[in-house]
Image (cartoon, rainbow, N blue to C red; front, side, top):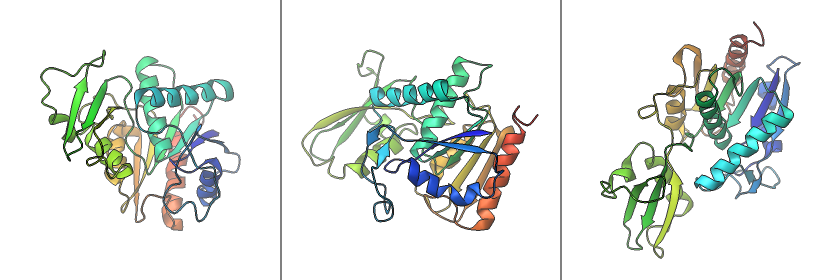
Length: 273
């Protein structure tokens, strides 16, 4: 069993390897884990800098189309050149990137899986490269307009600039952009065009491969992790909620549940059939 591992924003492959150490001890010893560094430098994730040395990396920065598309192409190139991989394990941004790549691949290639199973830990919702963009415009006085754009980059004429601020596909994008840019509403006027996110209420497609979702009850991304689980086929979807935050479970009991679910997901694939 070969497993590709994708780290979170502001960490790196070595950090993820350390995060996975206790979980790997509960899995079959012949499972092979490959860790993939992101291509871009990023600020360190909270509490990481005091424990782990850099560089601190990410697969993409703000969710602008060009950068997210490049991250997809980077991942697909690794799979083509170094795969195949039976399973992918993604943490945070790594989980979102893996989920989006799987969803797009399943839509384009109905009988050819990118991975046979996936594990999403502390996931944020994936960005959708195929449904267009939203332009966020801050006017410098505290007000925000969010306009849906057509394929040519023009704002839709029936858009009042307010609907998309709170839409389920963009609300979390706005919140996260403003958390990274706390003065965005008061700074000089600016605009940024960002991708919409997948959401189970607006995307009828479901990820078909077996999936395991690990969600921290105290994680600020918990709802996004649960929404991602709803974006997957419920017949082969397992969800584990642990008592921690944006992290791998710390208690042995929860880690054992993750290990058991990963092996159950593997058993549902052709690898063990």
